[in-house]
Image (cartoon, rainbow, N blue to C red):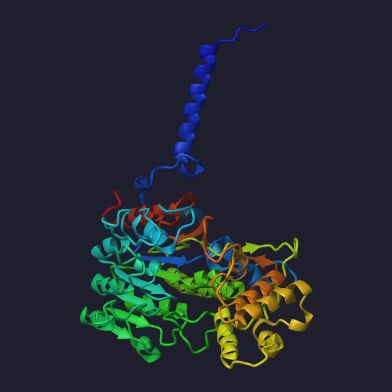
Length: 495
């Protein structure tokens, strides 16, 4: 029998353990991560930094867009057509929980990205007590001489863009956020309108006046927006064709309307200077589409978001040694899944190609029908409209689909279309029962489904290219984005 030497065994374990810990410490993404504040960058500082945030965009939103494009260009080949940013050399992933929940909102997650701090859902750049304010990286970069631009496809006072210039205890305080926009001194705001143009008292000074008195030019016609440049001073460019203070869904946008990419292009023109600039760009309507479980609208807006990234990449190609581009998200929305129980292992993205409008546009059609107060309302009255909008022939739906649609039509036409029980809440959320059911049917035929009308807690991707991009690989908390950017740009609080 061999006699065991316990002291040697313990010593060996200690040595092996020490070696493993040393190895893991040298590779922070393998499990023993350095704290966020230990991120140190030794390379060149980029002059131009683009931060793209696809609101509500995780892997399913990205992949569904790529699969849709692949099916459209090569029918039946099952070959995704990559979005431009998924080809970037650096890929990472972010954890998104906030101080309130594993399922966060845009205010808290944008705060993490912009200021490197966790906070409660609904709070922008303030701590959990709502008494201490955090400083977003944009303020540090402005102090260093960078020009600052904020672009979004949703209202400019919404949570994600606001996290880059405002500090409020409640994201719904849009009037206060608007006042802080005016006080920021930042150089370019583009895209959506102000949520609240008059203060809560009703007698408050209109927000446009406050913005103009702060030295901003408000450009809100296409001609005015096209005329601004880097000699125009501080500018707020408001989309003239906005609906509910936001850009139209990309699937609904007319060719002559300005796109998110147009606002990025104009932003580069306004911000370009010898000291450099930082531009945050939000694809906010990806989130809105997924809240409504409208997969086709999500795909179109994800592609439009990629088009805006391409504008930045063109700029990168002209300034490859001075430019950093980051593409990420704040959280996932809708619980989108590529897979549906009744299609098994199959997807049919060609089923989405006949869709011509978002749920929002179809809502206008269905609500107009309801307002005519038909004496004997019938789903068949809308069959031609449904075919034109979704490519669905109501006469050829399965019995299950027909039952879902008939019940949704009856609920829609009822006096109170709000959900009256848990089953209706699951079926319709807070949306028009008819349009959301049509979205579900076409989604499912394509092999897509959703689990929620709200956000989810799954990780989101990060893609990076350019000077300092090597810092963004791995799997880490979303607060680290701030510290990595601070280190790369050598801003005031990087150490």
